[in-house]
Length: 185
Image (cartoon, rainbow, N blue to C red):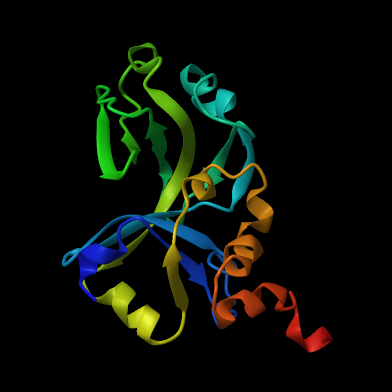
């Protein structure tokens, strides 16, 4: 498996990865190559409305209109992940895969009107140095599965971990029923 094949994939935390901030997390890999990987946790909505921290962008983001906790790295910075309409190439846009990419939050939002189909803003990100993610996958910390465009923009992010596992066509689907606390099983 080459490093580039993981861009656009989801990392789904295995039950063995039971420590915050990655317990039951679903991470969308935005960039993955020989130098490392960068992604955002897509199922951790924060209790902070976008209009309180980035009011100019509050009309651009999708419901629920809150910041998402993208990961433990750079939590004082924000990444905007967007899906642009077909054939759009708006200013400040960097394609990651397909029509999903990053928007530069320094670009005035009015320059992007009509180009953005959906958008979420993440405080922080998850990052790995060269070879680190591959090691964690080998150790059994992550399942690597295909992403669907709706994953990053889910209206019910709290249930995404189970839903992503449930839609798998192999034994991973059974893990969707894994108890929150196996000692109470």
